[in-house]
Each structure stands twice: as structure tokens, then as C-alpha cells.
Length: 125
Image 1: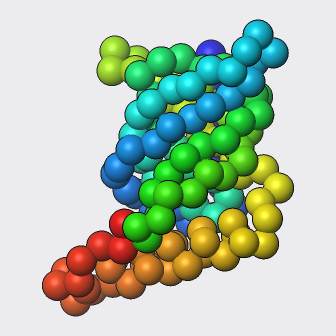
Image 2 (image 1 turned 45 degrees about the vertical axis):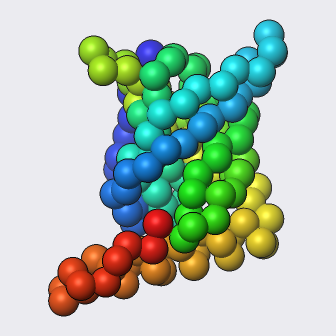
């Protein structure tokens, strides 16, 4: 199992909730894992999955941002297991300009809902 190093984080993360689907290719065939989106940043995301996946695998994650479902290319960077499942840190991998824009817009909308006095606004997700 991999350990994580939060000191290497380059982007601010936003804590979220919601469903996620991770599909990775460990050379033996595609593996899909359903779970929750725990947090999101411009650099990647953290997922809570119901099945184990390994670190350092290329794949795609499906998440809902600002009411739009999008697939993002990722590399699994670290994996940590406990009694409740598997937590996986994913780094976005070579995002297109369109995907970067979708992500930045969603993070901006989320930042507006987290400012003081923004409690009356519904979340963008």
C-alpha cells in the first residue's frame, strides 16, 4: 500500500461529496470501482472506493461538476485501505483545455458558495 504526502500538494482542494466512478487499466483488463468524491483540486481528486485499485495506474474518473458529468484522465498516485474501503489519490493527467476550463469553472463556483455569507446560495454541484 502507498502512503500519501500532503506536503507535495500544489493546488488548494475543495471538500465535496457525491458519486464517482474510477476506471483503470492494470494490464489484465479494465477495472471499474464506484465510490464517493471526497475532494477536488486543479491537480486531482481524492476518492473513497468500495474496491481496491493499485497506485500508479492510468485511468479515467467520472464526476459531476456544476450539473455536468465529465470524464477526466487520471493517474492513481496513492492508495490507503481501512475497514470502510479504499481511499485513492488521483492526479489529473494531461487535461485538455476544455477539461481544464470545466474544472476551473466548477472550482470557482464552489469557492463562491464557501465564502462567509454564502450560506444562502445553493452549491454548484
